[in-house]
Length: 433
Image (tube, rainbow, N blue to C red; front, top):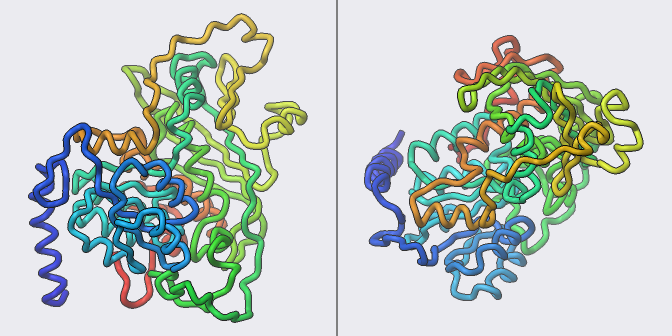
């Protein structure tokens, strides 16, 4: 550590002590219930644009994007916002209360940790990061800095998920020991391009790459196809795992898995699998004085699904993606907006429990309200960090070709030394967490 790094570290430590007792983070600001936040956005298009739309009633004070076209379009909408190409310069802007990070997965961690360490509250898109080690670093830092956090799993705020959780937790289908989660999505199955077309004039390719090893630009990577590649994302499981596995994590109080085993096509060093099946086992838990049984959760994507032993094949035409809870009294199937109890004849006269989960004010609004009040959110990083890790570990098990016996406290696979290559992040020179 050189002198400059030491001084930065010391100033951050001092800031952490001061911030722990403060509600707002911009110097001298104390937020009331109606104050607008000063927000900075790392990313301005795609999913970042969705968050911008949901937060336009606040002060959009800073915008950052590595693509000048995106940045100019966002700046035209929010002309009072300062603009940046490099998120590290946005972090330096002193008047920001909170930051939204909505970039490709491979730059989540460096931007998210910089935001947290600067004392800002954070909304980060899912998954929290590209690797398990980055995810744990973000989770631990948010807890240590006592910042208000929310992951971008906006489906969590919908009423359908709440009704499913109420049904499961009230015992409608009995004790649940088995869950199946499937999505129709398919990324990957590609070959690394060999052509080297010119970088678009508006794009800062080096900043887009951020901490990962340099490779020539290709439209197969940016701006929209990066999820196909291990270097930048994690395919369908990393993309949709945090959405669909969110439901069993919430309903069954799941956290870290004990074992993970995966099967799919032959592993490619560059591109994610177009289909995958992952088996997770979770330990027993306790909730409200009751012991909950261990759970086996199976993930499928790319056209795979549980099969006719659980649902007639015709039903999969109706449920292209879904979550199936298998209880000892029946089954419950759900997607983002629908739910059904099975077998239908058994539940024909079933009376649903009175709703006991409060209707959400909105996923982004939850975050805003918690910042103002000093409260918390439903998808804070203590919840969504383990959820992200579970999704990413499915990819780790697939890439190693072996079962993982997971040591969550030690952040390692007890039985699989080769897994560490895919658990830990590795950055190019000049970048670190």
